[in-house]
Image 1 (cartoon, rainbow, N blue to C red):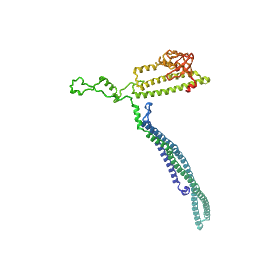
Image 2: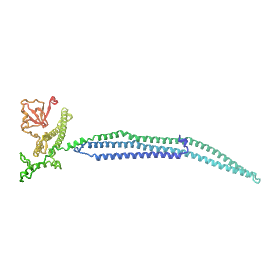
Image 3: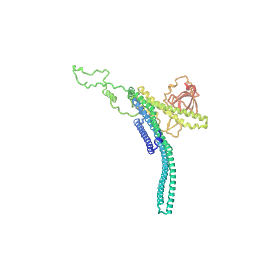
Image 4: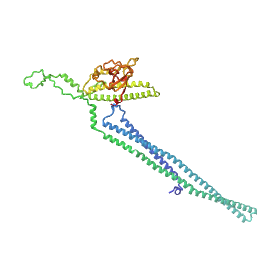
Length: 544
């Protein structure tokens, strides 16, 4: 079927139909726009919901229960699902809505061009018709005038009273009108022939071509709608695999809920390590009452070991009553002695692990700085080795502080694991020993308030700490050598005096307490602060 042949006379209807087609396309584009706005709003609300129920938590508030972990896993999957809804909205906006709006503008311009050509062809045909009609009317008018002149001439020619001049005049007028009628006839015939040619060309060439163009345009619009319908569905289908993975993740999170494990976490979190309270002793207030022999059957059992102190027993029991009621508040001490033994042990272990990780970072940084310093010493153009010394000294100082903190916490942990409970005075003294007063920090890790003093010795060891280290008669083999970075007076027993830049043998590495065992060239042995020397170990000793 062709619009040009079957609908040659339906120009106005085709005008309305093509306009309806463009309106329908724009209506569908509006539908897609509202749909993608719904997707955007839906995704935004999902993300807000996830943010509301998954707030930022501190490290101590991290969930450990499987039910909580599964719920947060579901929230993460839901957040990913919201992202896929955003992808759907973005793809719909780009591949469907944007494409439809651009195509709509092109259709409007093309339709306007075709309709203008149709109207122009119609105007040309109308103009030819007017010219033909005017020539026709003129021909008709000239024929009537010629007929009138012929009647007048015949009447005068038959009138015996008419003069010859009147007859000649009427004959001349008849001849003029007849000639004018013949000219009008010829002009009308020419205009009619021209109009017929233009009309044939209009309805058989121009209009069919214009209508064919309109038909092609409308069919392309229909095809475009079908493609965008398919794109609309493909956008949804494209995210289905990822959405399915999100849903599978939610199902997996649901399967990971373990009630036994959650119950174990509750026990692990709140177990105090205390023993359940014992039986309350019987307090006999009837001992001063005189009884007869027959009444002596009711009495208190004899206790060969002596009567227990009721006040002591009650006081001991009262100390444990908080296990069944509200636990009294305790001060937040550094050694965590206010916590139950089991909880204290866990907290101390966690603290030791964190300090150990920090110490390892500092050690790695020190090694990296030393390597960089060696590179600078070999290649001075790359940098000044002396510029790295303050950073190296600061790192060594941090290492000494971390080792001190680890040793202190390990001591408290040993007390918990050995069943020992240190007194508060002991904790204060240990705190005073391990925490120097605030002041300027030297490169070796000690603190001083004297700003004019360059170096201070590290915390002094226990005088008897190294007594058992020198009981062996056989000298230990050297595992490396070291260079003294600072002078050390060695005032405590077991330590060794050394001077700055002195070279010594290393016979025992630092075991984490901040001291290294060395030997002088003279054979004298002792301990010096690790931060005071630059150590170089032998290769075989490093691998051992």
